[in-house]
Every structure is written in structure tokens, then in C-alpha cells.
Length: 491
Image: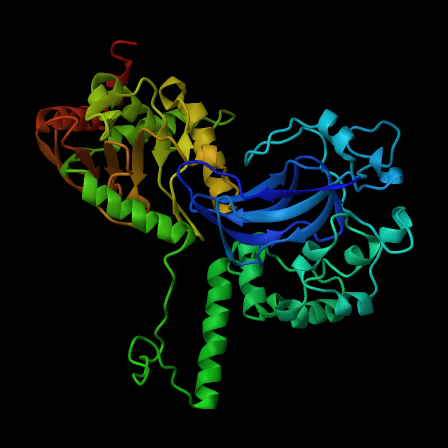
């Protein structure tokens, strides 16, 4: 006898209380295996796939794409034990079975790890989704779905009212996503097999919500990749044309009779944008920060980097050299690699340096974290920076790669600016900022010369140290930038 189990949105960690549904990965009536991802959500930290801990038949889904779901709210219901006999023995762990066939609950439990945390799961291949059809349960019955059945299919939650066990009738009437996506689906059917250069599910969701044909959008990314900014620009252009043609002025705000200024746009503070706003505000509220800065001659540092990047050797980035200098400075001034426990009123000095670095992406500013940066070589640091940056731009960073940093390195010089007073990445105690390196007049060996000069700034929590410690840290960093050989002292 089948037992219907309800799977709720799990606690995704780091105090996250909600997530936005980006894309459903299963439909009502599909057979799912243990630990199979059923939905992709966007949290304030990253885009993650949520695996279901139950194996069986999906009887209902809760929430449309784009909806916010609080932690603990139901995502899907699964009829455990309702998998037909001819499917119960197939799956990733079944030997001699059809490749990619979905596993039954028992087999999936044996093959899988049982982990349901985001970013974890079984090492076996994900089960291929299959649908139970009226009049048959074999592979042929789930091979295709006629267009008239798609048009007549019910809403995602139609299976929820089924009487305990999902029958073939309730399964056949559910799982179709129509409505707002109907026109886009029709265009896709007419277009044939043309491929659209889109990676991000968020970009596709935005296009669906605004009934925008991605084939009509020109991508500004690498190799014509369509980015979020391209979709937003296309949406604004179409809205402007529609408003001009209709001659209509929208009314917004508390005063229903007040006309909105031309081109006004309202952006909800939700998701990553809202989380960043809250974190910035909390940092300003709780941390008594101060900033000191100094100019340094980076000519020798650039020369050292050129000497390291010999043909055939792994490339060393400037950020990796700055990171190595930073970890050496934190070893001398461990007060800055700490946090303040406001509940116990204690300063907690941390033994390892997990170095965060600011990375600008299409989805906004993110801070990936290099674990145990103090124990890595410059080559290893350079490779890890490159990997995390590329993953961040693809929107694939896990929560583990975005959390638990102890110190942040912010290279805002890539934006062509000299200096900044950044907001500390709460709950850390300090952030080192690096401006652009530019040719400037400089007194070198008693003579005026043109040198490569950089401005360094340190924003720190005045609760963990005084100005003497902060100044000592920053001066050590500046000295190593000017004379990289100082890093060899004490090694």
C-alpha cells in the first residue's frame, strides 16, 4: 500500500529562511528516486538544487516558478510504494538494467548516500524521469505526451486531492505547465531545434514571465551567451515601445492618482539583492568600523609576478600574490582574523584563514571563499581564485563556497578606481581593499621617478583591535607589496 509523504523545503543553512522557486525538475506523475533533485531554488546565497529524500511517484507540487517558499513549507508530496513492479527494480544501482532508468525506493536507498542537504547526494547517476501513463506502466507508456493531453492537463497541485494512492487517472491529469508559458511553448515548437545560448535558469524564467522570445535577444556574453542584463534590456525596450504606442502613463505609489515618472523602474529587494542589503545594513548597525589607507609602490610586485609567469609554468595572478601577502600579515596580526560573539561578549580569534574575495557577476556581487588560504601556495591560490570566479559567473557556487569566510580581500581596482571605504562583510572583523595600479610620480631611491602605485585600505572592527594593530597590519602589507622578498623572512 502506498504511503504519501510530504517533502518540505529544508533548512539550507546560514540563517536562510526562504527561497525562490526557479525551475521545477519533476512533474506530477513522475517516478523519482531517493536523493533525486526535484526543484531548483534561488536563495540569498546561490542557486541550488534540492533533492527529495523519498522515492516513489510525485502526487503534487506546491508553488509556481518565481514564488517564494519559506523553510518548512511543502514542496512536493510523494507516494512511497506506488512505483510499479516493472520499475521497482531499475535505477542507478541496478545491474543489467536499462541505463538511466529510475530506481525504486529500496534500490535508491541502497545506492544513494541518503543526504538531502544542498550540494550533496549520491555518487550514482541521476535517475531518468519517467511518467506513469493510463493503460500501461512500461517504458513505452511514458515515452511521449500528446499535445491534446498537455492542453487538457490540470494544475500542478491537482494530484493533492487524490484519495491516498495516486491512480493512473490522477497522474495523467497532472504535471503539465501551461498558462503563462503557453505562448512561449508554441513559439518553441514552431522554431524546431534552434538552440538558444542561455545557461542561467533565472534568465529563462525572466523570459517566460515576460513572454519574451529568447531567439529575438542578442547576447552580450562570451560566444553570444544571453545574460540577465540582455533580457532586462529587451524587456524594458518592449515596455517602452508598448507605453509609447498606447499613450498610457502608469500610476504607482500610495497616491493612486499620481503619475509615475517616465522610465521609472522598481526593483524588489529580494533574493541575493535583498540579502546583500540586509547584510550591509546589519554591518553598519553592529560594527564600529574605521578605515586607514596608504599608497604603495607596486613596481617590484609586478616584476615578481612577471618572473613567476615563465613559459610552461602555471600562471600566477596578481590577486593570488596579494592573497599570499594578506595571509602572511594575518599570521603577524591575528586580531584581524576574528569575529565578535555579541551574545557572550567575546572576541573569537579564528585559527584558519578562509579568505573571501569580491566577485562581480550578472546576478550581483558575491563573495566566494577560499578555504585554508594560509596553507596554500600562490599557484594553488591562483587556480582556486580562477575556479571560484568562473563558477560564480555561471551561478553554480554552493553554500559551502559562499559562507564561513574569516577575512575578505576586495580588489576594486578592476573597476578603475583608486580607493574605497568598503563595508565589512559581517560577521568578519576586517577587509583589505586594493585600488588600481597606475603609473604615478614617486620618489624612488631619493629621485623622482614614474612608478606603479597602488592605494591600499583597511576597514576594521574597532572592537577587535586598536589603530596601532590596524596600522601595523596595513604597513606590513604595503612593505611586502613594495618589497616582495620580505615574505621570505622567517620562512
